[in-house]
Image: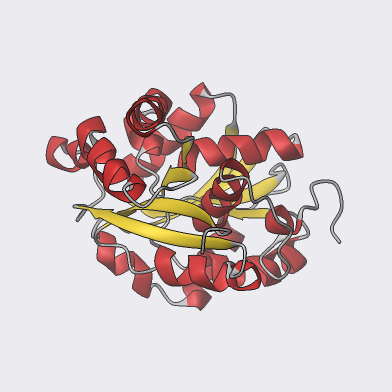
Length: 246
C-alpha cells in the first residue's frame, strides 16, 4: 500500500457518478493509484446565494484536511462550481488547500483549462445539464479565461442528484447539439452527469475530442499525484493523443 499514489477527491454530496466512473477509468491503474473521497454538502445547482455559498473555501479546506489525514499525494475539487463562481474562486480554493495540507490541488474547471492548453484549443462547444442562467455564467467564465464557447446546449436541470439519471441517449443528443463546425472540441461540464461513458464513441462520431469533467479532473489529478498515465477507452485526453485521432 505504501507504493500506491493516493489521490483525494472532494465530492459533491448529491453526486453518485464521479466515484464509480473514476473507479472504472482507474481500473488499469489499481496497482499504482488509489482514490479517496470526502463529501461536502451540495444539493442544487443555481445562482442563488444559498447554492453558490456551498463551495466556500473553509468547507473545501476542511474536506482536504480530512483527506490528507491519510497522506494524499494530491487533492482535487471534483466539482464545476468555478464555472459560475468564477475562476478566481477555484484558484483561491487550490491555494488554501495547498497552504493547509502541503499537497498540490486542482479543480474540474482549472483542469479543463490545462486540457485546452495541452491540445492548443480555444474554441469549444459547451454541453451542460444546467439551467439557462448557469449555462450563461459558465460561458462568461470561460470567455474571461480566454476560451470561447462557439456553440452550446443545456438540459435545464437544477437538482444535483437528478443529473446522474439522465439517459445516455439524451447525453448523446446533448453532445451533438453542443457541437458545431467552429468548435475544436466539445466540453461536457458537470461531474454529476455520466457523460464519460459515451466519450469514446462520440469522439468517433464527431471526429473531435470530447472533454468530460470527471475524466478531465482525473487526468489532472494523476499528473499532480505523480502518476500520469495513458488509459485506453475513455477518449483522446486520457489516451494521451492531443494531435491525432488515434
